[in-house]
Structure formats: structure tokens, C-alpha cells
Image 1 (cartoon, rainbow, N blue to C red):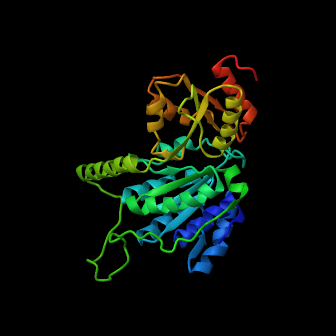
Image 2: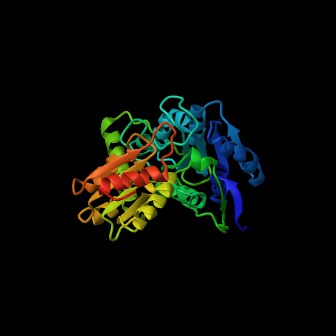
Image 3: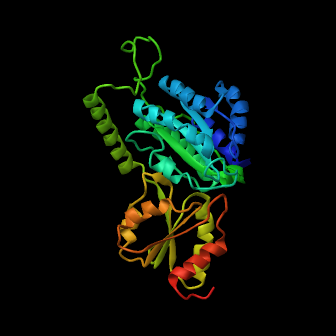
Length: 354
């Protein structure tokens, strides 16, 4: 298959099919409804099952059931609907069940609007549900990267027996770009001898549950989860850097905002300001290494976000007081412009002519 022009939401769905996902449970909410509609048409073509649930809560619990059987399964939503899935996500974590959960974020809080935003960062990276847990979060910046990260999301989910969040925004979900899927000749297989697949002579009946009434036993389970999270932090960090080797100032941005920020960085370089960019791809685990490697040479970092300031807290933790960390954000669905970001660079750099 060569390159095809597709909308972002549909790219996620098709990439999931290429990853071997044959089960989808969801509920339409803008700006991700095209993903649900695409799965409704596409999954029957590959012998899969699509079911529109009566609510987001029902959908995430259907995911729990399918994941228990060991199949590759996905659900998707947008910010208010994603909030409703939080209890189910915590149950998936507690039961160690693999699944992919997509959030095409929109403006908030409350019902908000259908414009793009990144203000779900805290919810996806700090654990939106109850209990001690972390969850891998992947944030693509282009539709081609959506293809790659969707495939990776399913592999990470199976490798660690964990849900994985794919985080986009209304702009990424609605834009159209040419993409190439390639062909996975074989979907990566992971042993699932824990799955509740019925009596097949594989050791008898199995039980999957997150309920543990004994405090000591539950604590032991929690520490086992923490060891798994530590392995993820060691092995699943993803990021991209741009011209940071000689940078006096480093911008930090993820997703679609990183693309706008890249243009501002190039413009600032042309104006004589040594600026670079760190783009986190995994929002959790957060990429601390590029900050540790640059924080003693850099005059300041600037976190650029479509929020009132959320990722900036992780940037400050990674920099650990070695350099100032500034912030520029737009919220409520307003997208920062290249001019605004460039002017912020000029202000922080002090005195460069715009």
C-alpha cells in the first residue's frame, strides 16, 4: 500500500487494524467521532467486532471483558468522555489487562468546546483514576507518527499487561495528511497464559480481578505494579530533540504544538538566537535525560502548551533548579501561533529585534 490521504481519526483506526485489533467499544463524541464511525465499517471487513456502547462507562467495561480474553482491543473518546472512563482504566491497571485507550482532547473544563487542547495532560500522566498507578502515554505530532505509535501502543500494552493511552487533540484528529501504513506480515505475539479463554487444557480455570480484601496482599500487588512501572521508565521513554547541542534556550512542546514551535525555533535561529526544541513523545514516562544533559548549559527552558500550564511542572522537575523554566500557553481551545511563540522567545532571550 502506497501513501493515502486520510483524516487523523481514521488513521488511528486503520493503524489499530494493522496492529491486529479486532475489537472496539466506544461512544461518539466530537472531535473523535470519525474514529468510531471508521471502526464500525472497518472491523466487520477483517472479522472483528464493533459495538457502540450506551455510554463511555459501558465502553471501558466492555474493553475490560475483551482484554480479559486476551484479544487486542481499543476504545476512544474525547476529554469529557475520557473522564468517564477513569474508573475502568484503574480497574484495567489493577487487573493487569492490556488495552489501548485514545483521547482526542478538546477544550475544557466542563463540556467546553470541540477545539483542540492539551489540558488533559495531568489526567493522563498523573493517574486520572484511583489508586497508585502510572500508565504509558504516547503523544504523536503527525499522522504518520500516529501510525507508528498506534502499533507501538498495542505492543507496549501486551508486553507489560497494561492499558496505554494515545493522546491527540482536536487538530490532530481532524487534519488530513498523506500516510503510509506499510505491511506488518506478522502481528507481534505475546504469551497470554493468564487470559480467561475457557477450559482448553492449559491449567484449568483462571480468575482476573482487581479485588483484594487483604491489605498485606494488596500491598504486595501494588509493589509488583511499581516494579513494572520502573521497567517502563527504563525502557519506554521516547523523545525527539532539535538543535539543542549549542542552544542557549530550549523550547519544550509535544503533539501538534511542537510542530508550530519548530517553525518558531527556525525563525529565532535566523534572527540569531540559539534556540532548540525537546519534544516529549512519551508523556509518561517523561523524558528526563535530554534535560539532565542540557540543564547546566542552557540559560532557560520555555514550555509551550495548549493549557494553562501542566507539562511545565514535569519540565521543572527534570531541570531540578539548574536553570529557569518559563511558560507560554493558550487555553480553552485557542491554538498558539508561530508569531506568539517567537515573541516569547524574544522576550526570554531579552532584546532580540522582532
